Image 1 (tube, protein in one colour):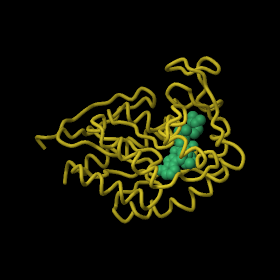
Image 2: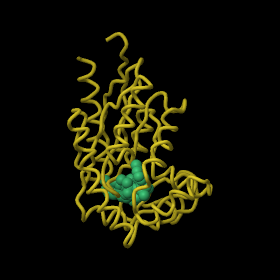
Image 3: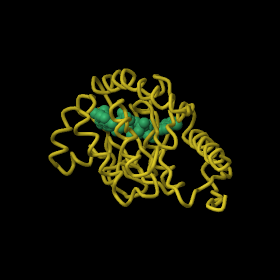
Amino acid sequence: MASLVLLMCHNKVVGSTHLFWKRKRKEMDILLIGPPGAGKGTQAEKLSQLLSLRHIASGDLFHKAFEEQSELGLKARRYVDLGELVPDDITIPMVIRHIEEPESIQGVVLDGFPRTLAQAQTLDAELQRLDRQLDLAIYLKVSREELLQRLAGRFFCQANQHVYHTKFRPPKVADRCDLDGSKLYQRPDDAGEAMRRRLVIYFNQTTQVLDYYREQHKLRVVDGNQSIDQVQEMLMNEINDYMSREAKA
Ligand code: AP5
Ligand code: MG
């Protein structure tokens, strides 16, 4: 108990007060898992700020690599544009490298990785090597109808990939990011065949990953159909619950 610090976090967005435990001696590693458009990026950004964890999003890393026209970007582009998974031998080293960086030492919120069994197993091995382990895998469960609506209205900012939605999260100034002023754009794989392919691949591949974490008793399910603020509150409840159980153990 001596090694634990109680933090009060006023969450103005949802108008309630969250209590959560932050362990002094140990980082926290959380995974957000869910279909395209489930809200992983939106919620990971918020959790990362609230809990001081590094947000690592595999999809955003690929988009950054495209912009930089790096070798990795060139290799990954054809898969992403088609809505297919980028092969593990490209994806795994890219994410693991980020987990090993000093910026990840306080813990991470993983968004979009792992999404194959091989990725999940490699992540476990890597965290073990770093004397860490995944604390929670939270599944954002969202209906197909809602996913289609969210993807169709989504925009990103060019500078930092901040996420907006024409209806659910409009920017204050049309076409500009509230946070950095950069121009907003739509992802080409958010429409047409690529978008449909992403949804099919997700539902085929991810069941295995969900089973993997369920067997480890790390999986929690949150109803992601609710508003952004309600989902955030439910996520914080799950994290608080986990932390208080850990504190008692
Ligand atoms: P990635 O970028 O990870 O895409 P994704 O998994 O398809 O998920 P999205 O980013 O589309 O959705 P999200 O859950 O983050 O939703 P968001 O918060 O934006 O991957 C892209 C591609 O990269 C893949 O297709 C693949 O090719 C490759 N790739 C990535 N990772 C890989 C891996 N591990 N292995 C192999 N290949 C990989 O929200 C969506 C919209 O809804 C936004 O407009 C938002 O404002 C709005 N919204 C969010 N929450 C709510 C809410 N509660 N209510 C109303 N609106 C909401
Ligand atoms: Mg995302």
